[in-house]
Length: 98
Image (cartoon, rainbow, N blue to C red; front, side, top):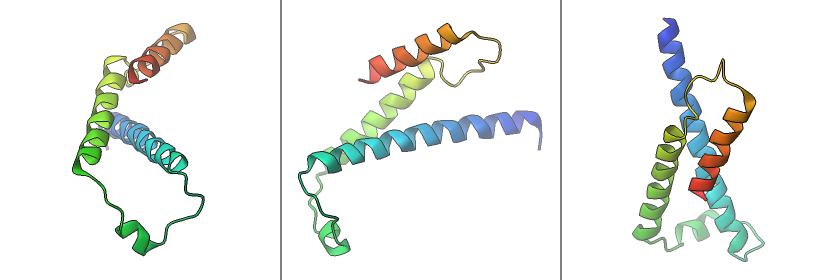
C-alpha cells in the first residue's frame, strides 16, 4: 500500500469514528431522558414507534457535524501546528455543533 492510501484510509476511519461516537452519544442522551430505567427486550424495541422525521433529523444532524468538523479543520495535518491553534479549532467545532 502506498503512503497516500494509508493517509486516506486513516482520515476516513477517523471521520467514521467521530461520527459514530456522535450518533451513539445522541442515542445515549435519548435513552437517559426517556425515563425508563430498565433495558428493553427485543420485542419491545421492535414495537417502538419511530417517526421518519426523527431519523431524518438525526441523519441531518450527523451530516451537519461532519461538515462542521471538516470546515473547522479537524481532519487536516497538524504535525507542525501549535496546541493553541488546535484548541481553537476544537472549541469552534464544538461551539458550532452545540
